[in-house]
Image (tube, rainbow, N blue to C red):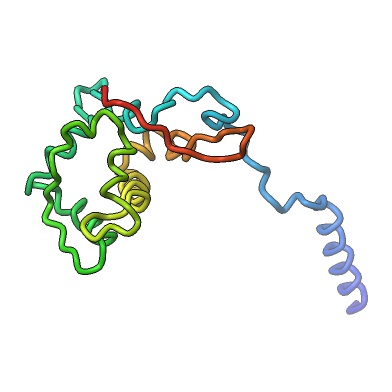
Length: 170
């Protein structure tokens, strides 16, 4: 009887393993999606100024408008995010200088002050990535634009290099 139980267990165990096809324990890969500028049309060729416009819901998301709000009344949550990436010893006050003519060449003009070595402002790359990606579902870049890197970073397919094109605010 004990041998029969053991044989029964062995046969049922082997049967389970035989019924599971090799590789079937892994999830199927997701369906391929279009990657803007690589496998799909790039509808934001000048990323900052193509996205930061007056929105269909009436929101003015232009960078000149957003930076004008940094006049000492910056959202404390955003200010805290920026403080985390500010240069050592710098306390951000929630103020931003007027963009003036800088709006004619965004983001290149922004990067002039927001350098990796800046002693007065958060570095541009950290600032943009924190602003657009770290807030998850609270970020329009994540919810509306699907957080797709190629909306901003443009691939030169023949050279294999990346860039972030500049343009004038609309």
